[in-house]
Structure formats: structure tokens, C-alpha cells
Length: 296
Image 1 (cartoon, rainbow, N blue to C red):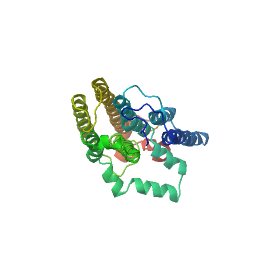
Image 2: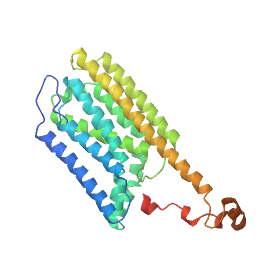
Image 3: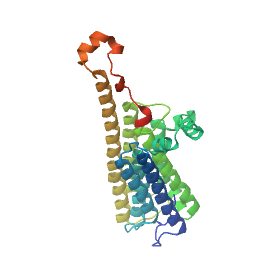
Image 4: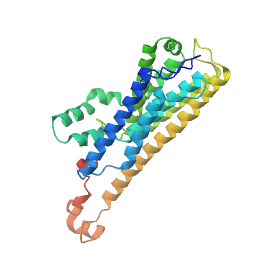
């Protein structure tokens, strides 16, 4: 994603690349909403809050690429970082875009191929939460604690590549921790929560170092540097709390389904009476089995 219109000492607005990026983000939102609408017209359920979540993520990306930013080059850049590298990925992933695509495709070669890719060993390794956390936060440490940030101020192409990495790493981390779409392996709450906690701690420490020392090779005003570091610290905390909430709600729903499945009564009898009469298998309500095809 091109976010190169924020540079130290410049006040230029978004260029052609930034405007194209913003338009592309909005087109992706339109495509998502169109697919969701097709599902509803054919009678499938698709919650509208997912539309709102994906739309907000796309708008955040478009605004970060071409919208008006606060004064101060470092503060403006850091607002872009929080929006594109953290908030937008969480909003997009929370809308379950892969699930929407799979349901829109229907049975066929394309759907099987996409599902096989999602369940492949390579993707399974990339969405291992600790590895995804390292790729996400490690990239930030490399950017801000080496001269890489200084280099992107003089190389637009390098800046585009760095910001594309931040977006991709943010999406990967959100996907691996939230686990809302189909995956090769479902990691437990301990693994995902531990990765989120470690990433949050590393992100907070990096923000504190930036409050004291600017990225090597740069010279920002103290107020600009402090404002950007505070935005990174508190903005990161807000997104991480939201991600922890998504993880907690997913765990709570899964436990609730397990609990309800254990105590579901069949038609025409109580749970305990029917279970004693029919046995552990026959006494279970046939409709208590999950319908993955309709509720994916």
C-alpha cells in the first residue's frame, strides 16, 4: 500500500499512487458488499455487522492512503501505521472474507482449490500465531530501530514495499490470532493469547523507545516525535484489546456450543429420561449437529 505522501518536511497531498490505492481499497469493499448481498438474495444468512466491519476496514485503508492527516510527519505516519497495520486488518479479518468467498463460489473446482490453499502446509505455517507475531512486530522493530525508515523517505518504491509488508503482516497476525476463517489447524486460546500478549508487549516497548529516540538517521521535532510515539502506544493498546475481545468471544461461543450440545434434549422427552432410555448415541438430538455448510 502506498502511504508515501507523509514525509518529513513536506506538505504535499496524495499523489496518483495514493489515490489509486484508496480507490482499490474502496472497490474491494464494494466487491465484498456485493457478494454478501448475493448470499442474502439466495436465502443464506450473512450478518450485516460483518458488512460494517469490512467497510470500516476498507475506508480506514483508503483514508490512510489519501486522506487528510494531522500535522507533523512522524505523527501522521504513525497514524497511518495504526490504521493500516493494526486497525484495518482486524476489521477486515473480523468480517470473515475468506468464508464469504468460499460460500459465494459454491461447490466446484475454484472453491476446492481455494480451500486447499487455505489448508496447505505453507499457509498453516505462516498462520502459526507466534510466527505471525514475530513477522508483524519484528518488521516494526526493523523499520524504526534501523535506518530503514530514513531510507524510505528518499525511495518511494521502498516505501511502498515496506507499507505493503506492514499491511500483509497485520492481516496475517489478525487472521492467525482471531481464527474466524477456515484454517489448517485450530490453535488453542493459550497459544493465541500468548502470541497476542507478547506482540503487544514488544509493540509497547518499541513505542517507548521512539518516545526517547527517533529512528536512526532522522530528525523530528520533539513534539512530533512524542505525539507519534504516544499514538503508537495507546492506539496499539486499543487495537490489541479489541483483538483480545474477539478471541474471548470466540472461546465463549465455542464453550457455549459444547455445553448446549451436551444437554440438548430430543423431541418428546427430557434430557435425562431420553438419554437413559435411548442410550448415549440415540438420545442425542439429530439437529444438534453443526451445519457447517450453512453457518460457515
